[in-house]
Length: 536
Image (cartoon, rainbow, N blue to C red; front, side, top):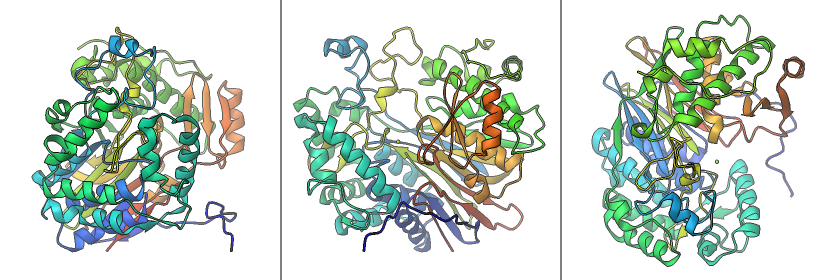
């Protein structure tokens, strides 16, 4: 029987999920269930987040991996904490060093864009500070899936096939051999429903679990990464791994119509979502499905994006402050640029002064918004031999212009696309939300927040709503189900509208809201992926 698991000719409806004791929402059902199982074994929302994240490196390797970065927002005991587990560029890299290798721009694949992976240290740090169960126990479900295998789900299979075809044509050097050994062991990508396993992943996860990630930065795994990099003239060294530790940061926020919307500060791009919301806060939106509503949203997002692309990098390297970019005075100046016609945005001068996402909540009031990624799907195309460690290519976002705020420099963290979000009202947590997907992420955050706050959509409907994505200049991509009549009006306003064939490029989100009065949890998950909510 031949079945197309990515063909759904009939519209379906997913309902909001309600639960009281615990909830895990993410893009892959097996990972969501693993997180819930850990909660049922006595773990809290933080343990569940780590277990889910570790599983996702195995059951959704097309979007993240052990060799990637992570960020988290953790609500516990009435306070929100931020964790930046993104790694810097190797200390020995520089613009001149890259040019000496014959590159005028940073390539997408190979060792040049590889930065220090932050994921394992991020897991260990979360466990150490807020977890209840032993770290080793929390990682165990991921080890079992890697060792025993799991059947490939539909969207996962689609992206795996696409990556394999691209890599087979373009990644022909010897250093990429190990990616094919790991992810196409039979000379092809695994098919939907086919069982895939990786002993290398299992052993690596076991070493991370047994050493609280120390092996990855100071021990056996660090040695293997160092050796692989040296063999292929990469810049990453064991000394770079040894010098790394995640950073606890103070989350940043804006108040949008009575709700505080929280993001991780730069080097993440969550600032773009906050800037757009700040620009839009003085408008009253009476109707969601209105060309005027969409027009203002798109224009505000464009203005925020060009600013963040100019200024955002590691915060200490920024030429303007976060406070200045989020100031009401600057938002007012940017708002004046929004007229009746689409504009080609330019960065302003403020007054001085490819990813997986998961959300968890437990019955103690703990909640986690967590995101991790290799970037551009599988990352750099490099897998450390025998380990299953797919190295990220996050350094591709650095600028080769020495005058740019985000200029490449050894030991510096680059502009980062992955961003977890969180919503509060007064002193109460509403809950975690996120929309993964490269530069779609702040645009997805903006749309989800407005769907919730302005248009009072339940969490599932807030995610199901058709999305738009500003690409560049006046170009805006919309999903196939985006209202055609509104698209036509936007085109008459000067927007260059393009209709996508499917929703694959519009992000994949998760939401968990908590009723402060009853503690009841309500969750929404993503129809654009293999998304699932596990709850009890």
